[in-house]
Image 1 (cartoon, rainbow, N blue to C red):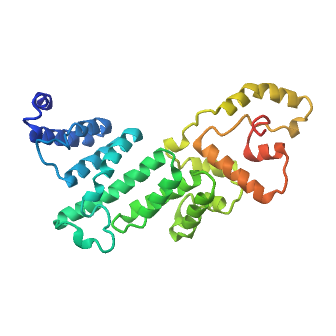
Image 2 (image 1 turned 180 degrees about the horizontal axis):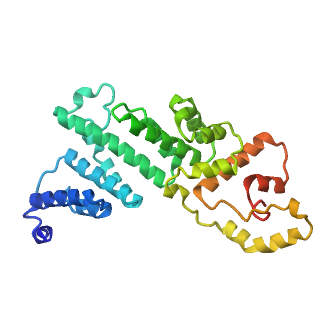
Image 3 (image 1 turned 135 degrees about the vertical axis):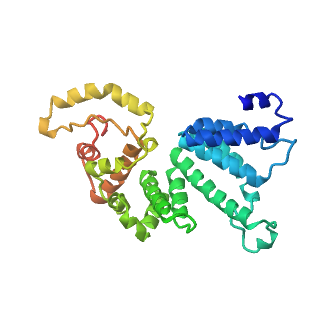
Length: 307
């Protein structure tokens, strides 16, 4: 393989090696070999003292690596490359909007380079939003996706997808004032009314109980990482260990109609956790008092889990 032969004397052939790697990455990407293509690009020396590589070229390669790693569902490695890109993105004209009064300080750059810098800046923000989403930093992801949904340089169909991603992330985010603010912002956005998630968005915003059927419908719209199982906490492990014994003891003094038939002892997925948190808050808006059994039935938890 030509690349392997040149690698042994890479210092003498950095330019040729980089060209080979770019070409090989194109071929691998066309075959949807995302991780392999990213690995080939990662071998390109961007900080070598033997040749000058502009910040624009560095950013172009790093953003491409991040995008490929995200396609291969490797958000951890993608985050590493994005952090490298964050060190130079402000040096690339057009990638980040100039602050008021500093426009004259921007280096003279061709229109083509400015346009590419702008596109790379948008891709940087999009990749950042996707990484936040993969890291379950849903509030940050929702904010970034919603900001991007207003950028007119992005095709309308893509902006609609970003708005949808913002709504999904906001629903999955932890309950609290920040979540309430982003939910209010999305509800005021007239475009949200056309989304499949609008019904559950409305119920969550209005602090209404979200029923199991509605949760199930919403779950079908989620990406695999948004349906991922949560690791059991020490408390949940203890609850699970006594659940069978506890259910037997309760069954001796209660009629079948009074028992909650759910076997869930707590949230098992990201969606479960978000919906249980939300429904507890929604119940507090509706009921001045409620029995533990009633709350368990509302949250679809077993008699042990509800305690």
